[in-house]
Length: 442
Image (cartoon, rainbow, N blue to C red; front, top):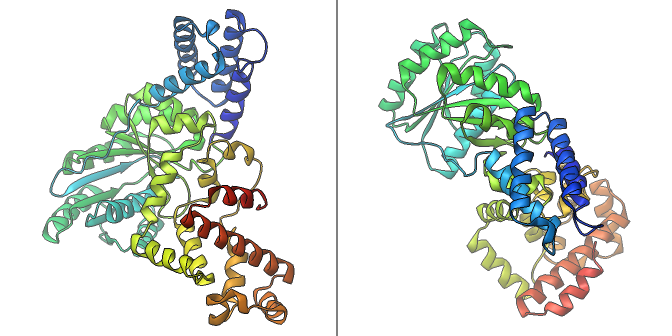
């Protein structure tokens, strides 16, 4: 996420991190490189220029040149300004209304239909809402079919009227259906076009007037950069939408849309899409995103994701098993499943301060645990519950059954043993021994 922008900003600020004498001249040179990095990320030239001017004004106003850590102070100023540029504060979704009506807008290919499903899943699982998805893209038959597939996948009902070519009528009927059937959120997926046109704008404006939504959200493909910002302005002039959704942030995005869109349309980014799975949706936090762009990680979001998967009862059972030396491969498999539910592996690694930058060129497959799972599934119930029973002949059978080698089975056994000992030490307070053991682990 924003790896190119992060690299360039890091190089630009590096000169002020204790290397050489700090002067007003090299502060200006550094900010010139910062502006160049923003322009390369497809940020609007005027916005990039104003951004660096504000940073310079604050830097000189806070006597950066005379501080002990000028580089660190400049990083803080840049982080604060990036936060403001992206909206300053987190803005939640408005769920007032009975039912709450959410109108999705955007160009074709921006990810509207998929994100409608992600938002429905988010509201269902995180906010305990009864959601109704509505298919109003009557021009692209595959769109309604796609919405039905998504709805079935997440267990959310989809409202569609086969043969009806009037999206305004469909949306009005859908709201009536929601009221009659106890649905408290209605998400209307509208038609997109390959470009902004008058017919499209008139249609979505008519739907807006008919259902009077509490939230009108503009879905934008973050990989389209400055074009996305211009499209957002065109939609906002007609709809006066409440917020922006950035999709495909897990792709090769330069960051221009995220950094420019708030300044141009003066509307907050409310959600971001970070992968293909239905769970790959995050509330947008400008301060956390600024920290990630500057390579500081995002520990808060990482902890929040972990807490969502945390089961207190299961944790107590695991603790008892560890205390009695009964922690087995079945328990290990459950831990892996919980980690996988937290989201895209490369995205998770990017949230750890310093680690994301160190591993930026390493491709972390979402199936990184596939080999481990195959080995565990090739074990018998006895072997999974009592790993000490696994001898040389059993290892050969497990390797053959999982399509791996005996060396890989041995490596997993060794790492599992080290992890079990480490968890036991954590319970017993053996901090120093645990640190020594961690040095020997991969």
